[in-house]
Length: 109
Image (cartoon, rainbow, N blue to C red):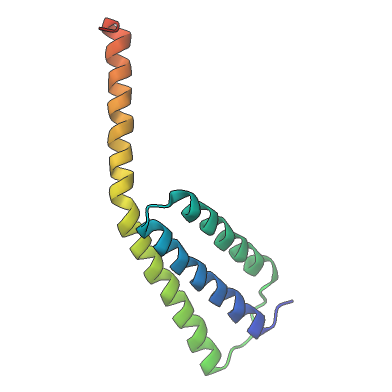
């Protein structure tokens, strides 16, 4: 069973990881981004398995809310940084698929 301080520590670690994910996305370091996301997911699993619904005081609840807001903000920034790359990758994949269909239909030139 996790104490309230344990829970807040995990949320703080997740907020820190999501900020590192923003930095990785800013550098287009997709491998680092994936590794950081996996570490964050491990923290989520820990919370799911061990967090018990304990009543939080006003200050503790506010801290948890602030950490969640930080993570959501970081998530939005990560999406803003990765969406153009994902769009470019999608175009490349579609282009490659079109090339393959043309080669299959007409043979290579």
